[in-house]
Length: 469
Length: 98
Image: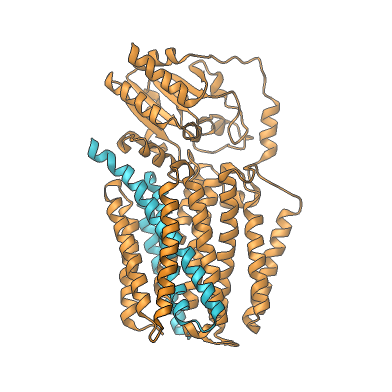
């Protein structure tokens, strides 16, 4: 049993983690918050190193070696990763937390005396249940995050993969895992443990594989939550208060982010996990595409002229903008406009990036001041007073069908009401539909002008024209 | 574990959950990505379990399992905090410029 002295430092560490999260309530306090986070982790690790008595020096050397080895790898990855690849990085990291939970569960099962939870063959029943819980959630987190990583990295198709009996197979797997857990708790069977861990790995793969790329913000948030609850399971197993506190914080955080993302797409979490997007509806709306509708096509010069003479321009960036690497060009364009006295704001839909808040980071990276960046609810009322909405690399999040067409797969999703601006520019490579596969009627609206081409090149040309005029 | 200590742990869990609920809703949406990265880093506090295991393990293979657990959790800890720092620095930079 851990003495109260250590528990006290675990509490300090837990409070540091809470302060780290609290710091994120404003960009001004966030960096300070992160210092608390790092301090909390340092306190936790140092305290833990002092707990066991009579350990040989060599063991401490191993621990430090592992920490430094992992630290070097982690630091290298985190320094080199481009911000566009942030979601993959986070997914990859989630998988590691999951795996760590599984491994710690294994150590507590094979050598329970380490944690004072009983002896081999006589582990406390509640501990057995808790380690099973931690290991299963950890395993699902691991394999699910690997699939999410693969999808985001483009190693696995982002299209929803569906096969017959999928739900039945998953349900069977889940039932089998539960049955094996019961068997394991009663008989402390290693075989049962390793089989249900393997089944949980399989379940993680099968749960995430069918989910499409558009739902990735939800999936990442959900896995974030899982990784927290895996830590909670291990915390209960080891009787470790810090793991429980931290796991609860992370679990709740991921759950809230999942909720926010689901709401931003008007999907229920069950719908995302179980169904994916309504493919039938998307196909139907593709079929009725009629080609007689004409779009207005503009040139960068036109766009430069209209925006220069505007009073207020709202820029609506989507993930396509980030893929094209147009952030810096966008920053230049906004500066050129501001120099001419035009008010410039950015409107961000919650699912504009591939993970919650992703687009904000991408804009911040390009030096775009966060004061100019507004969330959906804060900016939607302003489109009516804007002269220009410059939609770049976004599509579905502006689609008015989400409000009007009940059959549309995106129906009910809150949208950025760009159509209310006097003039709407859509910078797009082609007329292709967005992730949802739904055509956007705004393209054919009278006040819409399409700017076809690469997001970065088009924006750069606009900047050039503005500078020349 | 006695049922009493289980209830104590459960109490901690539930209260921490409530703290999390109120703290997380206060996080500005602009910082949701750093939130995710930092929660990722702190959930790797699971490393403490692995450290205890490695220090007290009796068999070599449990030592090895614990070693790997510390290694991968550390990737997460360092990677998570560093990438969070990188992001937050971007948000901080502008405030100086303006």
